[in-house]
Image 1 (spheres, rainbow, N blue to C red):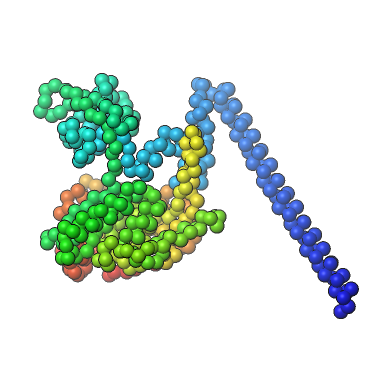
Image 2 (cartoon, helix red, strand yellow):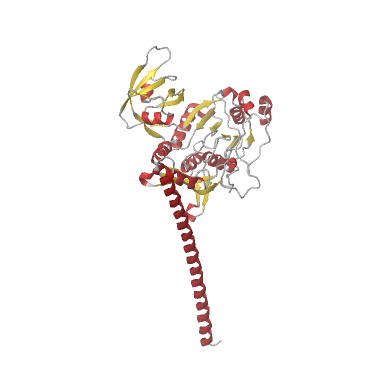
Length: 449
């Protein structure tokens, strides 16, 4: 082919490519324009409805509440975990995730419209002031709290550090109410409780109730303390994640890392490339390869499932209990300045072996069902998991969605069948023997896939 012919056909090919690109861009531009037009039309519709409600509703509505409810309706229609947080709710969420606040240091509940002290937290202003379990709080700084919700009463008890608050207390055994002055201090929500377990005091037990900013540091401190207390005779560790609803993703990663030397911990995949990430373990297993049993049930969700899934995939722990809740999605908090924030589902997470937990949960290696007390068994309450939530994200990777299980844990440790099984497992007692003694159906060990 002569050079002039080659140049001609090369020019024609480039011209056709350019023309095709221009047409494609025009189509995209037209599509985007059409989409934007539709959005503006829908926003105009929303404005018409809003104005009609404001002008004609039987009572004058709260404009702010109308807008907040509309925004929350939009987000909650996406999935059960996306929502709008107004300024107050956003502040409450930050307190929970930080795990510390200015307050008195008491756990309270509401009983017949009166705030009742469940227990004072050790080494806090309340415990030092002599507040006791069972005390009834009737007034705060002389103002009665009858009619307030528990949340409203708690808000009044919290406040800036070093500020005083006078509690009016009614105590059993005392005829008259009396005042106690308490000075607020920094209170830490302890997400980790630990103790030495076993007849020979040779097993370290750790219960993690939530994943806030304090969790990993407190877990490490608890393990070091038990290692020192038990010494070389230690048989292993029980990590109790039952009824733990989750929390911060980075804390779930760090907690898993405490027991791992290497490998992936969790994979997150979102709609955009920046939401697709992989978290890896670092060397430094704090238990030095010791045996680990993780307890889960239908109340173990989100961050708890990340930990259980990671340790199960790496065969670093044996999972005992019942199927977990099945929340396999990641929520990102997007602050909106003084207006609060939105909690938006931005990714799904997967275990190291690429298992999706969404609407499936973590299946334990040993399924141990905790017998229910007679009064609870009579109610015949069906367990709820992610798969039973309206509008949940579908898991297209499984044939049948199945998540959740019963979440009852007895207060009496002697009746805790799942805990007893974990102790026997670490002591080398055969699963069949434990099952026979507890009259519980225990299948052979299987690895979830």
